[in-house]
Length: 171
Image (cartoon, rainbow, N blue to C red; front, side, top):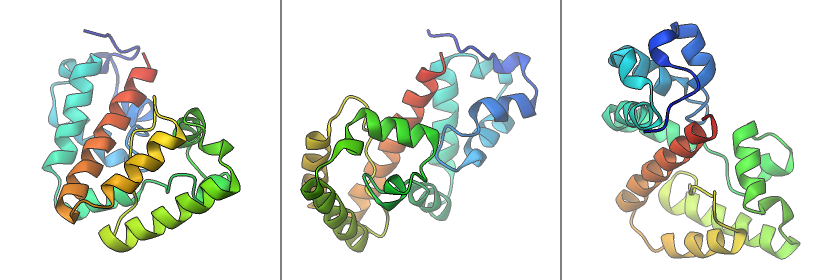
């Protein structure tokens, strides 16, 4: 098992929240729920902390899950162009080359973002680490063929993957 730099068993709530409150995009309630619902020694490894945070999300009602999904920015969207992303999102999108899109690619991202939101009512979410903009566009096009329930579940799965990757970056 991978050890986390900060051992939850040795941290107070404020220290824990400062370290992990940002892991789920604009949703510190996830880290707070993990802190409240677990023996803190059960949060000392990447695997344990990741599972505890995912469990908080999975136990949340649909409205809270929707708010979490909607907290994520559009890929290569207006927030990115205005430099309004969180540091994590900015780094993740740049790592996938989304900051290097051509005008045509940006136009396609904008069209896909709009079509996806119209169809599903929330933004397209994918863990971009290890992908490039071509992979992301292909996934975008493919997932537009899904139904809403499938995409809702896929969005949450991708959010958990993003969170786990963010936690791994802290080790």
